[in-house]
View 1: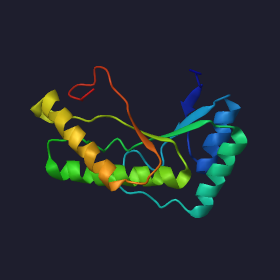
View 2: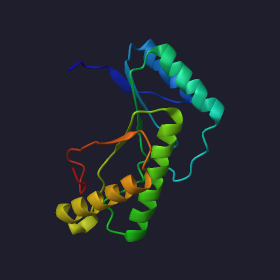
View 3: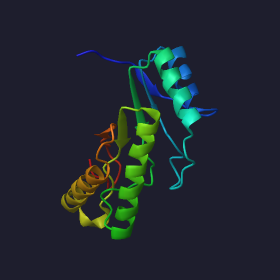
Length: 155
């Protein structure tokens, strides 16, 4: 198993600059946000932006590229409307990953509120099942990022 050095890179000025910034630091892996992590809405990624990112990734020899989803997404949410919105937003994040050619999408399992971990895990699993049904054919894989001591979060 080989170990890759990587870091979360800013996309300020263009997605392609994340690859260049990663190369400057000697990274073989990078992580980016494909949109504002604190908003539901997202500006579409143009064909030109996607092509520039793919070229920059190749030129910078970035072996693995991750995106991190919006912090608003909660796949374990007790509120059905928020969970439905989160599933739709997560599928959209996976589509954005495919547009850019990213390998993985990182998410936090979410917060079950006062319902407890077991209920939260069940909702998260059902949400991920729904995501995978809607995202058939998309290339990016899901990575669950666990948290430590983050209050009422799952994982």
